[in-house]
Length: 204
Image (tube, rainbow, N blue to C red; front, side, top):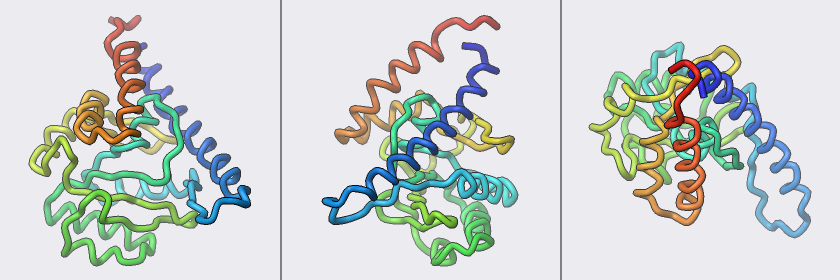
């Protein structure tokens, strides 16, 4: 697949995911036997606003986790957006400014605490979707961020650029976490790598 075709596909993947998540959220809320309603509603407007704010404040971040897999082509629902934030004081302060301008509750507390995936999260936007935050991943320490950032995919959503962990790095992370859902993702992500990234393109 050519570079231009991949760029278009990444944007379409994210849009497909947002529509799917919205439908899944409505179906879940319609289940009378669900004792605990879990929100899966991540709105397109909220995602765009977040990405614009991160860019405006020059935050160095990488989209990781399930939504990163979506961008690369593994379309599935997810309850949150995972962001790997570069661990410098300047960058963390820029990230907090981006959140505060969007009236995120508790944003100021993030300047004085480590960001740990699974423990550190905030709610964003009108839909109140969850941002899960971390300074490091299972397979990558915070000191690995710059190298991962340099080789990251810069995707586009409605004209707004955003940074996504490279597919090979995402595969490495899925292998390291080795949870059931990550192992299920792994097979599909490896297939995408073989078919879309390693196959010779028409431009080569």
